[in-house]
Length: 182
Image 1 (cartoon, rainbow, N blue to C red):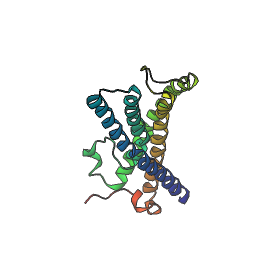
Image 2 (spheres, rainbow, N blue to C red):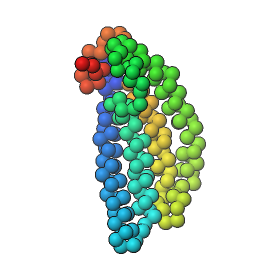
Image 3 (cartoon, rainbow, N blue to C red):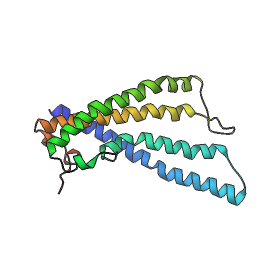
Image 4 (cartoon, rainbow, N blue to C red):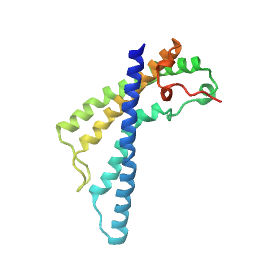
């Protein structure tokens, strides 16, 4: 049981770290976008690579923090059933939802994007825009990163549900326990 709690804690800490790191991309996106606008409208200068940069940073940020958002319960959910539910019912909903919906989804994203990403790496793919950024393969790799971090956090959710169903949620740090309504 303690090993399960350690796995949950390790996955959650990893996604928390990724969330903290990639959330800083927001500042970079704003600064680059602001610079693009100032250069274009004040100095009549434009750089395609800078436009690529803030779009790519946006994609990397959102895919990189997806596991963190799942940890913080920030994804869409039908709250009319979940929010008023008792603790054990929430655990069942999370366990079944993870096994029936989340696991197949992350598997399919990984399986169908693997060749797409590998091809991009083989060709050393860059932006399709003339004067755009090199290294599009790095951005495409974040499709797989997205699937992995979400799948890992889904595993942590399923394991947390099992601990609750076995009445051992006490093994988890308070921040990783189900939030009590009230």
